[in-house]
Image (tube, rainbow, N blue to C red; front, side, top):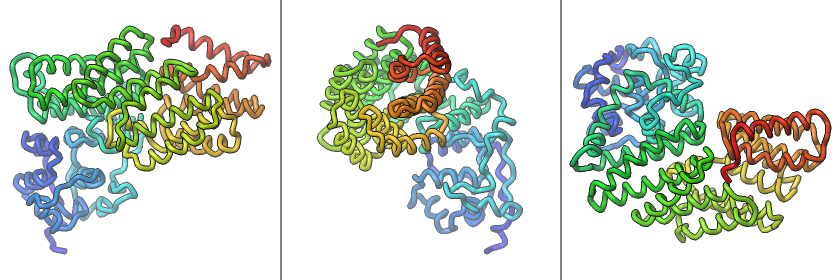
Length: 497
């Protein structure tokens, strides 16, 4: 290896703040990033390659534009290898990893910087949650005091799975320094909102990413935390739609407004605002017609199915399926089939098993993180939760044990309290069905605690079957649990259904 390759790579913090560098990061143009590093830091292709664990030839191809970086693990490798500071990482669409200033990269003193872990990140740069909590200037347990539309935009650009830990890191990284580097892209949006200003693809793409981000934040934040930011986002989309954009932009704006409105309708229901929920439902229907994407209606009716019970829930799912295309959109298809299986099982219909198999087949073809904003919640853990729910309702003890173990494993690996509330309630119901009252109470208590932590109306309502199963029992542990569930329900207010 040339001696040049062993010299430290010095990148001053000012380089990451240059407007052309921020533009390159926001566009994910790694070739331009490398060119700017070579131009302003005098770093050779070989030294860049050594730092990011790529060959000199590959670096040359990226800089020439003959190879374009699109893989998430390579973005992470570049960010970690070059020790990109948090504001620049966020501009690139990556979660922040630390709050300390950028340091000098020394590929001789730190050879582990190019030894990759299983997910492609340098092992020396993997942060612990404890270190983030210790050094972060922001309270990580109260992240919704940040600028939610901006947080949603950043979350929407992430390629990695979104869980509560990732969201907390994003929120912790949104310091004043970070906000300054990402405020410029919204200036064009502000001008478009306040006066005659032509829209462009970049502005539309940012709004689309923000819609995706709100859907992702909904998995990990209470409804109250994101409702105001989401309604602000929808109002901005409405203003732009009324400003007379071109047909091409109008259809894209209408589609992303529809995606946002379906989520707003669901959140309004969760917040016990049925009038607002119905209003947003009408908005989503209009957006579906205007954009030509009727599948938006499929999402709306799927959300509605959670607000009703019995035959009405089943009919809502069947209505949602009418808006599916003949082919494609397999993630939405898998979701609707899973919901159909759940509701058939609740009605005692054994066809639920075959429908669940169809859902699993659709999920096998699906790409949840690439299809629709609302499909990004669907993962193996969620599918296991649907299976568990279905088999619990059918009283299929053998499959309940298998699906329950898978679902529990998913809950143990994540901090998604909304999902945990549903899974724990179903496991509690399964134990009660086989007569294990003690375990049923244990998991019901976990379900209640998860629902309380996530402020999830649906999580609390999902405990209704547990309440019915426990009603005949009179021992003290059962009475205390039922009292706590009832008290939580009273605190939350009447059911929006």
